[in-house]
Amino acid sequence: MPHALLLAGPEFCGKYDFARALAKSLLCEKRDVNTQAACNDCKSCSLFEADSHPDFSAVQLAEKKSQIVVDQIRKLNEFVYLSRSYEGSRVVIIAPVERLNINAANSLLKTLEEPPEKTVLILVSSNPSQLIPTIRSRCQVLHLPQPTLQQATEWLSTQTIENSPDELLAAAGGKPMLAKQLDEGERLATRKELATDILKLLRGNHSLTNVAKKWEKTPKADLLDWQLQWVQAMIKSQYQSDDAPRDTISPHLHRLMKHSISSLWELHDGLVELKSHVHTSLSPLLFTENMLILWNNQSRSH
Image (cartoon, rainbow, N blue to C red; front, side, top):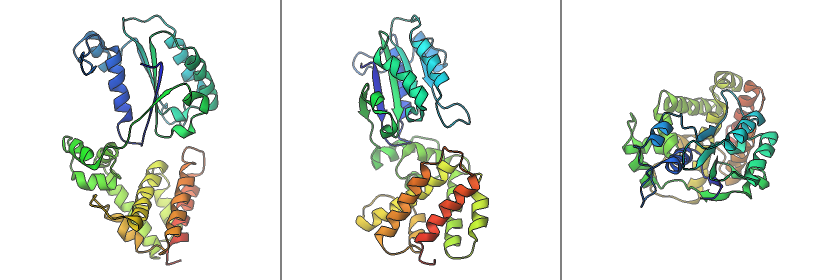
């Protein structure tokens, strides 16, 4: 194993689950000789499952925080230089590592440059290009691609879900973990309601201000992800046709958009730009208003 591994790949495709399975294997006292999978039976595996393994630590976003801060990394640096409790490795997971603020990133560099013996740092990222180059250069990168539609369908079929796998995967853009999330609670219904409100806005049946106020308290990342899925489906339909499950929402929206492919790309790029401000202190109402203005600007009815 390298001392630092960067797991890079699309969101909602199981990277963090893979990172935990790898960490559990590295800590296991009796892992399988052939597959290297954890035995799930030894004391180390039991401690890991109970989130109390003394040689394992995970750094994630604190509640209601948009960045991993330097104090979290300083505690991590102290942890990795402690004496190990077991014979195996000491393992750390940092996810999402692209959310390190600049001070936290610089603090992590010290450990990446001079890692303790038998210590493995597993960094998980959906946007590795956002990492500072000096962190990327000190890691071995492992790209985890999005599963095929068949793989995603087979996995989702083994889960306890209320909606059909095809509908969920179409709504999730083929991402299995997102599909499972959409099945929970009212997320799928909320997503459809947003599409309905955008349709009514573009038809002139709703005012922009009223729609913006209705959605200002909804997580901004969800709003942008859903809209980007619809716009990407519209763009994809202009270039190719395939047998993949189609999201029933995007064709309805597409009918109200300008015919030029360039207008769809302008809407797409505007939503991507807005997504870069998801974790800033931008007013929620101003955020949703800007989001809806992008649709208005590219619709045929305006």
